[in-house]
Length: 145
Image (cartoon, rainbow, N blue to C red; front, side, top):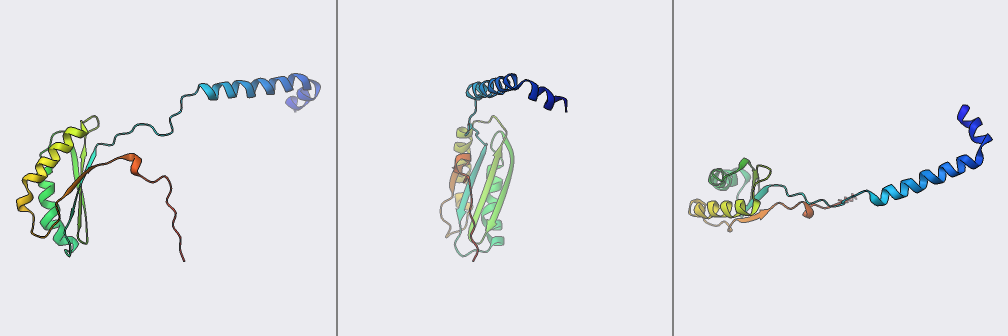
């Protein structure tokens, strides 16, 4: 009640106070450093292998297990996980924060090449990719019929 009475008695002061608040807010907004896409480098390398016609349990036993054991010897390793689907093995190698991901990618590539002879016949050569946060979609839209 006090604020209402004070603003009705002094409309010019309230007007200038409102202008000052808007002006200071716009100046502060211009000076505020905002980065919409910060540089985030998640230390993850993925090793994908196609094994056509194999069910998930065969993929796990014949491909994922061998690759997991091979890459478990790299330096700065945090942990290793894998996903197995029909004809596809994806092994994720997580490194500690601050690890050199380019050197880690080279080391993982060498480890995978060293166990290629132990992998079954009929698989495609494994592909090795670094996880990049910019490849994640901003929005996903799903339509149902």
